[in-house]
Length: 151
Image 1: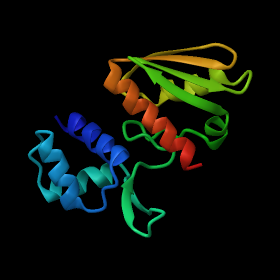
Image 2 (image 1 turned 180 degrees about the vertical axis):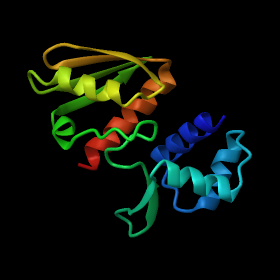
Image 3 (image 1 turned 60 degrees about the vertical axis):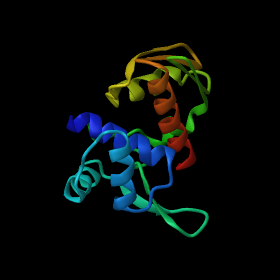
């Protein structure tokens, strides 16, 4: 239950500009998670979620730049910089990299141990990632886009 709640929390802060714990609690409750402020505060701390300023001068919660909550594994800037594009369709995510770097990026993604990802197959400059379903593909794609934007 905790793992599912934390995954939903990460999904919500990725999809929406959430700036308060009250708003986060309300969104979690909309999705069937009856949480308290103490629980959300603890989840935020465990997931290393922080606040950043938006272009509009407001603050919002954001996923840590390079750390995954499950393992604390760092996804290096060099690997992020080697990604050219990320696209998803159905339960697949296609990641284009610079020539010769797809395998290194795929290993980095595999080591993140995200529950949505079933596995990656890498060629020279392309990675085909299989996810559990279309929603998982969209979530993983969004998280990779966030990493690319925050570099």
